[in-house]
Amino acid sequence: MENKKSFMSKLSLFGILCGVLLLSSCTKAYKLVPSESSQGKEHGDGRDLDVVKENLRSVRVYDEWETSAMFDVLWMSDHTRRSYVDQYCARRGKSAADKESMVGGELDKNRETISFYILADVRDPFHPELDDKNAAWTIYLDAYGKKIMPSSIKKIGIEELAPELLTLFGHKYRRPKFKKPYLVEFPIKDLQESIQTKKPFMMVLSSVARQCEIGWQGGHPVLVKEIKNVSSKQKGRKRVKDEDYYWL
Image (cartoon, rainbow, N blue to C red; front, top):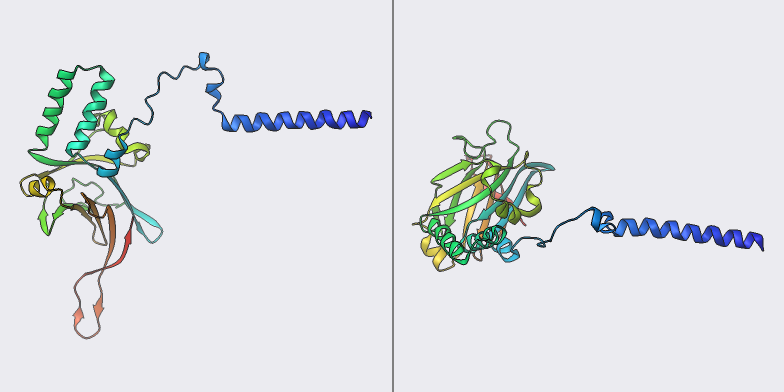
């Protein structure tokens, strides 16, 4: 009888220990003593998921198993700018008049240029910067075959990216020392009709070996091509051609 009681006591103790371990893994410790670890009022994720879906594109480019480059591209569309202003003004307690004025200023920017924030991690040892004259990766827009060159590629400091914009990138910017932020602008005149009529357009990022096509407004979000030189035995070298497509 004593042995049975001892066994039951040990079993109960074991059950309690298991329960504590499981509870600690499921429950965040700071929630057990809220008075000692105030978290403030949560705003949730803080991101407008429709804006993220419509305007944020991410691609990781590999050379076999090695990462060659990573890009996160946020199109500063009218929708993106409105969402940014909404969060900016809500956090700072701005009035409706202030918000309306700020929205107008942001939308005015889109009447002059089409802008993108790019977080880039380029692993090229010689020309990793996107604003380098001989950058390892080049950028242009393609709207129904019309090629549009950037008017400005500017590397910016992290302090120039508002917290509201960083939130839209989500987890993609948790290692800022590896990803460098850039503001890339294009003249609006060659793309205005496509944007107003919501026709697809894409950004093309190219190295000498890889090409990324990132689409908006119904275009395929991400397409990566490998560019190979194929030799002919009798007629010399053929043109560079695209092979090994993969979609993300």
